[in-house]
Length: 496
Image (cartoon, rainbow, N blue to C red):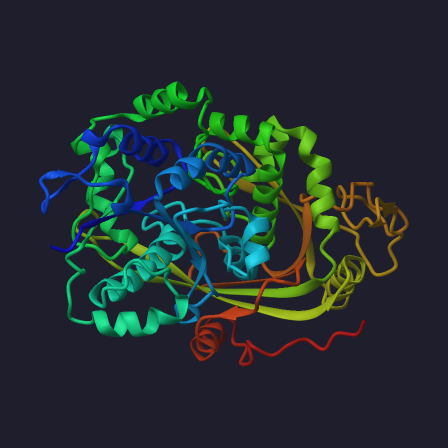
């Protein structure tokens, strides 16, 4: 008889940590091995962890202090995997596969050291933030895909009776090919998901994460019937500590009070959240990070002490770029069952990088483009109108020209300020490296209710953001239909 093995998805948070410890200390809580009719042995548990590269240092500390010693003591196998690149074709990196793990690999520094492609890398180059609605693509890409890949390799090894061997990332392609048309290897159960009793609704949606496995197991719901408080109290009784929620530093689903508490203890998380949102808002001032706040207004309200940390993080960005952002808005009649008269507005975006350099030269170039093309300058600020509502506030800056007197701000030249009259007056002094407000030069303002319509503006943003257009030919066609301009993709001739 072949032994059965249970795949345990470890998230490092309260629920999965409590369940794993319960299995270690209470054999009666473990699944039953059908071969023996008894609870599985600890060596039959394979713990899987997906590396996003954005966990808090406190999570790393808790796991390395309390969980890893238990895994080493009982010979429980821990496999830690992350993405090797932005495409699934890049495969995965197996950071660790051992029954004696020495390190929990979860933070930005850990991922960078091992060459793992982080969730933040995708956000930075695409100028995006985690999606607030469903499906949760960040979980699908950085947890579902990596765990799925590890399970494919484990299945491949199980069929060749090599399951005891450490997995090798290079075997992924062969493992996927061998698994075509076949169900999961019968010696592998799971994966186990650490959903608590209050999260029963998540059970019906768990398939969207793509982990290979026909039998998802939810022991906290179906066997132990533990809610989050039960899990928290169990860990407290074992280790005498308050176990922290496992979450990315820029997770948009965290509750407001929880974010305040975590960011106060670990302010670098707030810095990461604000910087991620900055990359997005300069290109689209409606795409804030949290559902309850923008990260910027959130930190201004609750954590003013991190302002200097945000400023320092932006000051460390060496290369900036001047971008042109164009959007073509079109309205389509798309009736639904609930709304038979529904009209939907779709937008096509073209993002072009026009020039690169340091922050000062790019800001000066923005003013030059605005002056030469007689564009409107807007200062964009974030404003919270009421609880759980967000909008941006755009103010016109009048009187700017290339002959303006520019005041010096901290470590650079300040190009931001309140509206003023006349060319001889300097801009009101404002710390140069603060995230907001920022200035953009607008050619076509964003439409309100008139469609089809066009939007075009120029703005300075970090150079790491990639140029982007889904289909250049289709965008050119839509842009021409709206504006009559034939060469939407043509770059300006800029003189620096």
